[in-house]
Image: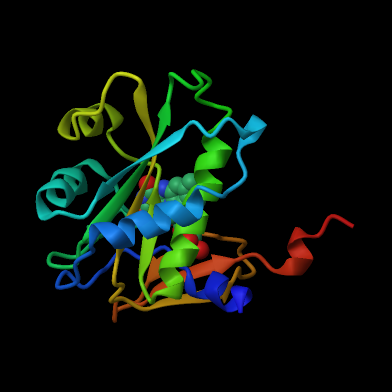
Length: 192
Ligand SMILES: Cc1cc2nc3c(=O)[nH]c(=O)nc-3n(C[C@H](O)[C@H](O)[C@H](O)COP(=O)(O)O)c2cc1C
């Protein structure tokens, strides 16, 4: 069921590094995402699939994880993602970098749901060093990274909880490294 996949599709920050992706797997995620809605149907998004160790190792230092857990460096050593898809905008198609942020989000979630269906997982990463990323991947001038999607075989436990009385939505970890993600209740979201 789609609802089960949505629940399973968490933002993972710990992965089994023995897992490796093939180019076909990466292309299959991107092929699914190419049918996503696009503002004005302009489809300016282009994708860099990183699945070879050289590329993955070059991207990992340029992405920032879990800003809400300042005391913890994630992923833990030996638990990095083994793939990344960098969602970029081709400015030869559109130079409006705001308009297609939503396209990037829809596309990322679609790829992550497809990954969840294969018992894989990932994390959207908006906090990355775009200029450096462009350089290490030798992206041409017209290709601008919008969002990075980390991918791998998750090896950490994530628990969804309800937002408590204090109203905090800050995610947290316990002494066993279980990651808790507070979600607002349906009642709190409804305006009418
Ligand atoms: C657009 C977007 C950008 C994000 N950027 C980052 C990021 O840079 N680093 C990170 O660790 N998590 C990032 N996240 C993941 C969120 O922190 C995560 O969605 C949130 O904690 C809720 O957890 P959940 O996805 O498991 O529900 C991002 C999520 C979204 C939607």
